[in-house]
Amino acid sequence: MAYLGNSTRDRTPAAPRAGAAGPRLGHSGPERIADGPGQTGRGADAGRRWALPDDGERVASFGAGLALGLTLGAGLALLLTPRTGAETRAVLRRSVRRARARGGDAWDDLGDVLRVATRRGGRRVRRAVQRGGWTAQDLIDERRAARRRKRAARMAALDC
Image 1: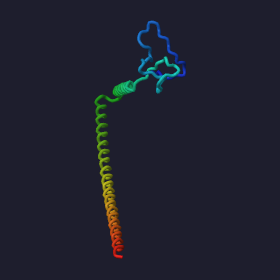
Image 2: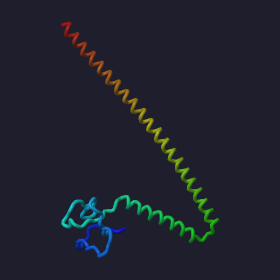
Image 3: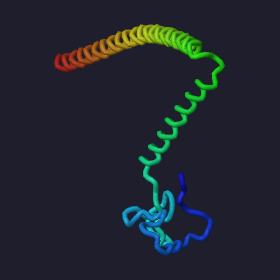
Image 4: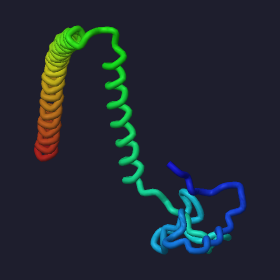
């Protein structure tokens, strides 16, 4: 991938070659201009237009390189293996079975851990709700007692 950003060298535009058709390399047109990567606007060298690669292009080239590397790596691994094709397939089957069994065990372990955590959490929630109910009942009782005291004080004031 070519980098067409800022450099420490002089950034004067190169003169077009005689007979060259089409846009120069690095010329992106009027809609996307910048002084360098991550910069916008016009700087000291406003005549030079730098091509800014799109993120989609970067992702596509990375994906293509990754797919090519995986394909070549798998092909070379199969070609350079010291086993025959049948032996290699048997080894692959065994490793897939082991991975499946390990995955199933891990999945079961995760389920057990989540069940225990759910039970503990449920107990904590039930206790908190019960404590909240007790606290609310205490507050209600205190308010009723305060109202009774207030009413008794008013009645005592009227009896005088």
